[in-house]
Amino acid sequence: MLRTFVAVNETGSITSAGRQVGRTQPAVTHQIHRLEKALGKPLFAGDRRHLNLTPDGEILLGYARTLLNLNDEIRERFRAPDIAGHVRLGVPDLYAAFLLPAVLGRFSRAYPQIEIELRCSRSVHLHAALQRDEIDVAVMTRQPEFGAATVVREEPLIWVAARDYPVSTQGTLPLALLPAGSIYRQHALDALGHVGRSWTITAVSDSIAGLQAAVYAGLAVSIFPLCALNQNMRRLGRADGLRDLPAMEIVLQRKPSGVGPAAEHLAQYIEAELGGSVR
Image 1 (cartoon, rainbow, N blue to C red):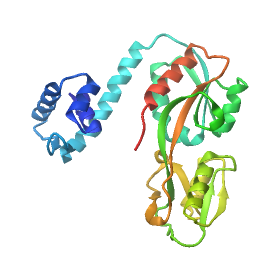
Image 2 (image 1 turned 120 degrees about the vertical axis):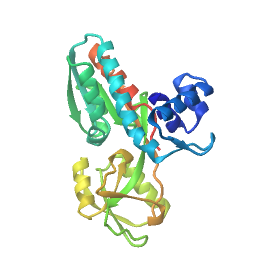
Image 3 (image 1 turned 45 degrees about the horizontal axis):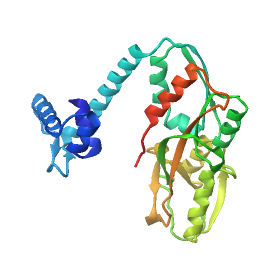
Image 4 (image 1 turned 180 degrees about the vertical axis):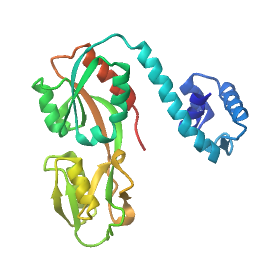
């Protein structure tokens, strides 16, 4: 019932939820009614075409996702084959900090005999390390020169500033960016060029920590993936005189010489967990 409830919320449709969980429309409706009866509270408001969570439905959603994650983790743990090994995983620090902690935590509990060595660097350096067989698997921001790769997620790219930082629509915009060659940096400068906005780079850092420090201190505006937005920053947009930024493709690649069972299990697990897009 909880899985059906979450599916209805995520798809916004009884029909689409039915396809997702493999049930008919009447069966989905029946499960939602059973859940509401068990709780003694209505969970959705509106008609069948415009379903919105009630306040009680919003409360249940958090609990439902927690329980379903735990349920899936238990199934994965006891279904997991007895595989051991050492995997060298490369990932930019942005994704290591904001996308992968929960994923790697669940994987480690499901496969306790697989040891993960995490290497953080920019995507272009990780791709080069793959070609040299220095790492087994890499999760990276797609670059034109990477060739064939599995897209595991689309992550929106956004403008950010400190919560109390005043951003004028006129004048020169101070920027905190990754070094030259970064696709994030190029998208930022291209967007400013399209609106004819003047800019100056006041901070350059290879790491998310350096960019965050510049933003938090009110020294500059920066661009981050949406997953990195937190309570210390605010999202900027057209009202601030800034052009929308594209979504970035996050890809997964294995080293060209091939990987062993432990690395392959990790790669498939990441693909499954990060699959989909964020709006």
